[in-house]
Length: 396
Image (cartoon, rainbow, N blue to C red):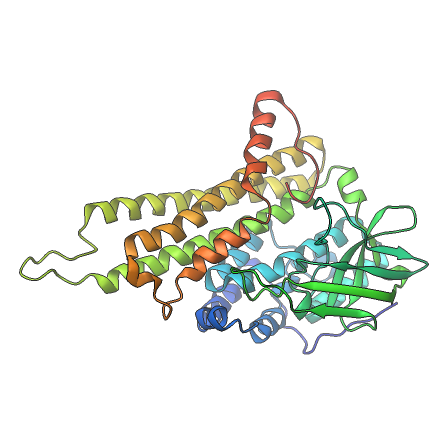
């Protein structure tokens, strides 16, 4: 049985309101330097340490294990606030909370006691799920044989910063498990080879496992969470929607600030070049409404997830998946629209390197590829028109 200790003990968050307050305070702190970190590709080691020391990483821990069992609405608000400040910092905890949900659904009592205690102390969970060479997102070749883990992963967001790396691997029977691998265990190599033009500082590179010993108590069933009705898939997806919503708000707010700064009167006219232009006002107002709609869709989807978690059956889980698909599709479109409008209204000056405003478009364009929006609308339509329940998987 492996034990992992955080670098420093974490604070305890005692209420959902405190979680929101802490997230808002940290967002203000992380916003400073976010543009520079992206421009210079400075990995956010310090912001992420501060984040997990704050206690926010433990807000979904059930009350029976010392947590506050935060609602999905609170969790998405936290992720959105962090993503608005720094999209990379906002994305990294997504897999942390996903692993905690797998633990809640499938972990044994002893595993819950041990891993929840670690997370309450400040342990950060990364991920090693996807494989670069796999033909489909659900296919894995990483395997556990005779209590030894071997394989390679890519898109391992957060693994570079984590204390444990929950890793998808197939056992001798071909059944997929989630192995809570200690980050610094012999045979584990995390490589900083993520070269995406957006979300540049998420550390979403490679993880290699070379004859890594695996204790049975570190293996949590994974596949069975999709073989029965659970809200694991929509839970994963709504956090991605919250990330995109945060990116959209960041682009919108930076656009407002940039246009206000440019609003200087034209010579001898008394008319400002930005704030009095009817087309600018129209586009700004439309995007404001679209952003508010995104908030509403996420809130409705969060309520559907909470309902499915309380009473998981085929119907509640399907409804949660559909509501989240709506929010995910909408926030995909809005994050891209907001980043595009920043340049459309800001003009050439908005593209100057010193502003680094292009990071919002790069981040939106990269992150929204995580689960393509073209998968969402057909699933929604098939459910509404034909009553076909969405597939239970982590990408829907």
